[in-house]
Image (cartoon, rainbow, N blue to C red; front, side, top):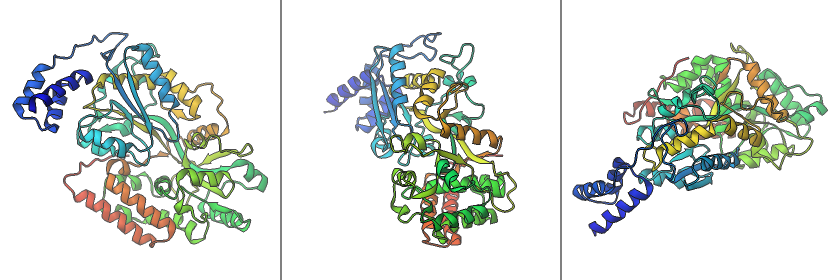
Length: 476
């Protein structure tokens, strides 16, 4: 029995180009003894070292299969198929095993656990694998050699030189780049510019004016607001934008850093109370809490509601359902009384989390796939296909991609340095889940503002007290 399993392991290791470490891990999972695993290690010939040169700077095995997994969400996956074609143009012998899905966690967590993960993954969406957990488990490869590699199509530049400065900071864990962030996302409040102009409405710059306008819209028989009810993190992301505008960036950083009592601070209470007014005043489309993200967005496009919070993936996600006279535009959250940061401040960050598996069968191939994705050619295709920006400098230069794209560009330009992104939900999966669920409670009146925030604070305290959970901090 043992001999047969060893033979199978050797064949698998040769086929998938396992490293010595991967053979040991796989052998342990198969229940092999230490001597049997040693036999398998010695039976597998050392993998050839592939020369690193101008044509192959990362030393990719040109014949090795490459396992690619993409989140098939708001941006679709045509751009990834394009990168597959670019990869095969360079390495025609390489078989690409390609999967596009929205259920990353349920489908691929078992493979990470088994030591047989995909080589490269876009780990995004509501059912993604918690990245901080993958980092803590040693699952994600160090991307330092990728950052230093020559850019694919920008002569004289390294890979990192071609990207928007600071755009990759959120992918650094303990000083090591583990994740690459691709889409330059603007997150705000969307509305139909055509309908607003017909009604003579102006987008409100203060929350008091938002409440006044909502009352007017409600009187017309239109719901002022909807949101992605089954995924209340969309409202939490709006909160994450409003909080630093109202309480200063330090208020958001306090949440990220798990500071004592941070979720009970006055600015947090005041922002949460403002959002709760949408429910208390019956400004939310009836039944919103039961709607999926696409269902709520479809209702908004049908004119059932005036406002919806979302990121710049919205237009591409709803392709084919947008009425001809519906001109969607995005603006920042209105200001609360006493905000120290101007109205123009907005949520903006690099999104779509790409990483290479440390235990992948083709680690260098996964990095090469990212080098192509983050090229000018790959990024320009993405922008043309999705009408969204990337972090690749100059990739969208000269493209006319319509009013929604332009409104996002205008919003981020007006914000200047006043752009915000939280980290607590990325760093701490349980806090992410608990805060998401509590925002669902907040927006449906299931508990008071104080009770909701107390529940989130208790979750944050539990994370902080758990010594098994790695902790991270950030500064302004």
